[in-house]
Length: 383
Image 1: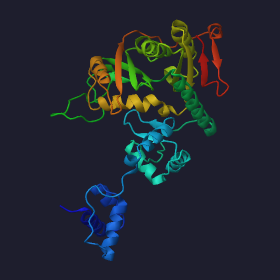
Image 2: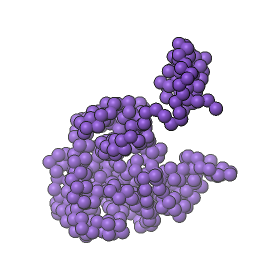
Image 3: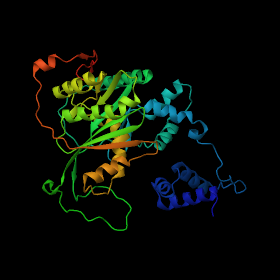
Image 4: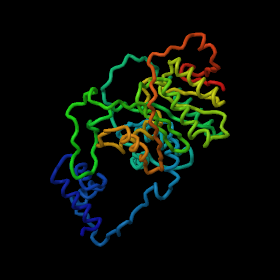
């Protein structure tokens, strides 16, 4: 068994054999830092072994995250409104650089360097990624407007949290064909599942439209799986259903609710049906003042439900063919994560018609108060 110094020297030796780029390759292979490999290589070349000094296992500087656990909590707080994620893989990314985060920590009296912040971000499941040119768009949104909307959402959330009001993140998850179809991902089993070669919709039992409501403060999710069309009426009735089942019990004294939603889809910022149904089936029915903040176009992945709830669900059923609605519901209900997430699910068999229209007269009856900042994205519907 090699001690720490011997392992470092051996890693340096293997790096020398490879040549250029060897430090990184050996570091990845051995699971150690590239600086450790470089130091071992340097000691090997200079013959500076210091054989009489061997640090005991577990020695050395204590990692900053263990020495000062407050840093982790502070970073999570800083990243709270600047985090996006893939609803399938769970990968997280952020708009902030390690230098900016380190600067904010120093402003709060925590002296830490950008490199340490990078290591801590890795422990929090963030990773450094480059942009991938994949999509074309004609959207002409000023980046300053987008940034201002993010800051406004963060401010409104902070106000609601301080007063103990409800803050939920909502969205529709990717539609799924129900039947003997391949579900991407892998799972442990003795034999592979045999599924259809082609994903023809005509062979499906049906199509599932999951609509999720994520309670940010409670870290709980509720998913309504619709068998009909993904319409604004379905979205609003799902939110109203959540309030009836959970919200009214958990937030009995809360007169207001904040909804964070994407700018498109069934909860589109331009949809008349979405606003009218919210007024009728949530505000007026339950006497709740409802504020809605939409994320700017092209920013749906910043919606908390994407990386807090949907990614966990996708991981839970990866590699499992969704052969029935019951299978889908059961996998949603059993979704958990290391941070205590719990999820409930309900099947909705009601038929929803597409193309519903709300005339000007009905829209004029709405008790809507549009905010001064981006009124097209931020508005409040009075009870």
